[in-house]
Length: 261
Image 1 (cartoon, rainbow, N blue to C red):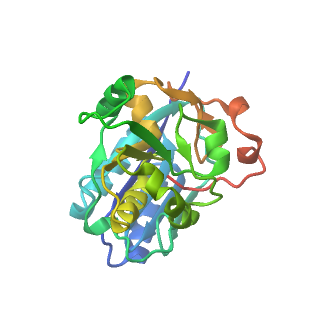
Image 2 (tube, helix red, strand yellow; image 1 turned 180 degrees about the vertical axis):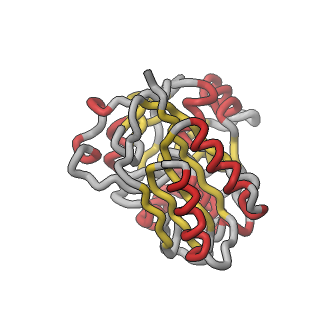
Image 3 (cartoon, rainbow, N blue to C red; image 1 turned 90 degrees about the vertical axis):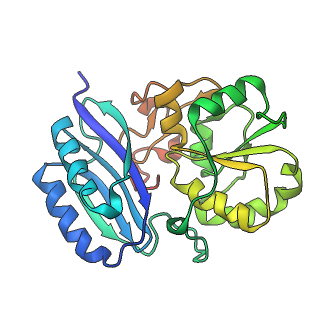
């Protein structure tokens, strides 16, 4: 029976002293016997955690008591055992690395589309204005190989910091189309969408909550394969159930588990 609650959450918000917050969150997560990864930076928080339902919800309640993170939203899934072996809380330069310091989601996000609306667009093949729909995958190659939205444009990148260079050559190809960028849980698209704004690209949205929220809200329609996750489950299906045997070899046991999105 799946009794372990897994959450993925992030929020871009300015944190004056992430090191002090690291000590506080580490103590809180340990008190509730949680396992997983919490990343902190001046730009915000990114976390993947697992534990009992009571422990997870008590932790989230504590985090949200900080007014800066009162809107932290978690995506949930269940497993039979924790997909993490220990708790890690780290301070980094960025909670998702892009190497473009002018891209600052904590100051305001790009336009997003929710899962229900996106499914309606995918069913129709166009957005509400009749423009042809293009799904833009911002994830790494090994994630794309495990599964993707049917017919999505992929950028053949090895790491997210490659995105700015990879998007430049396809700008003209995307002109006049309704572009929806997507990733695992939404965090990469927060920066990707802002970068596209900075390039002067129009008519694009980020998928709010990423693939995981899409699965949670509407299921697996229009998605082929499985979604790679950054824990020991390796991949989940559209019911958010672990599918480790389906994960690509490059995301297998020898690939480090890390907190991406």
